[in-house]
Length: 378
Ligand code: G3P
Image 1: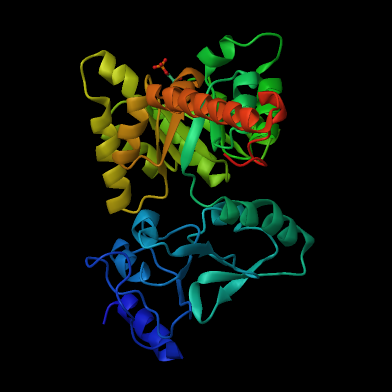
Image 2: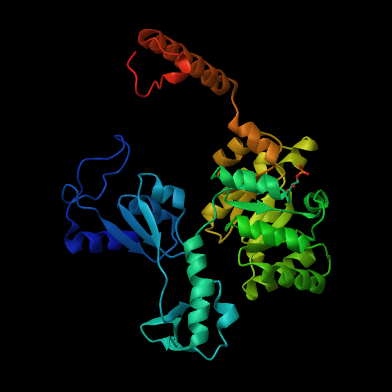
């Protein structure tokens, strides 16, 4: 009987009882609701995509932050997704294991869980690792959303105020457009404005040069992702950054295969340039669609970040193609906010409001500006 079935059986065995009426339309499988108002939850340690639909039937789903079925499938009926942090133990598949495996506080294997190592919880260094590395990564969870593609501090502050900023991508061209600050200074300010990933790009093309620049950027702030262009040296550098626990964003990707290679080398973010592909009569969104599908099918520990976005339609198409993130220039963010009918509607509501106030004022023999429509009756 499949793992998820065993899980469901366990959940039901835990007295959560049978399913109630289907939720969210005839096609949705019945939510597991034994008693009216009783919420159901499940802990799932695996990453099998096939478990998604069953897990979606629970109200609360607890997942491994470093390997889990695709979230959109689990969330489709509104399940609340939580994550957990193991205390005093680490799985050898944990992304940070390579960087800590020789530490004195990493102890013997756990006899009942062979691919897990016990950790000395009394060690100060263990507590630092847990609080500085493990908990933030688990809370961060997968990165979804909208990034700003700029090094301009004012643009970043503006979009951050809108409450829609999930991260920032910079590159040498965007930095070149700023004035009066070093790249480090710009990056530090940006990392202070958003807690989301901030990409800083290396310019060296040899492995040791990339590692030197990347290690330097990674020390500037916890949310720095080192941006590495796709190349053979780039792949080697990304693999070594992963071994050191430094997160990378592979840039200048123009094919699904380049993305697949970067994911295998350990890149946390994959940046295909849709605008530049469109520029040469190729359909950039094809690469996004193919890469998002490959990442979902093979449960790769990475996310697709649509880059070189030129217009609002790129953002819609990227979201529909399954891209986890889009990095968007400020001008395109502004265009996304606007719609002529919204502008027309705001003007119409305003004039109807003013008309109502005039009518109220006339009723009460007052000047329109003295009438507060919230207090007066039409
Ligand atoms: O994120 C990459 C982006 O900055 C490149 O955009 O418009 O120069 O292709 P573009």
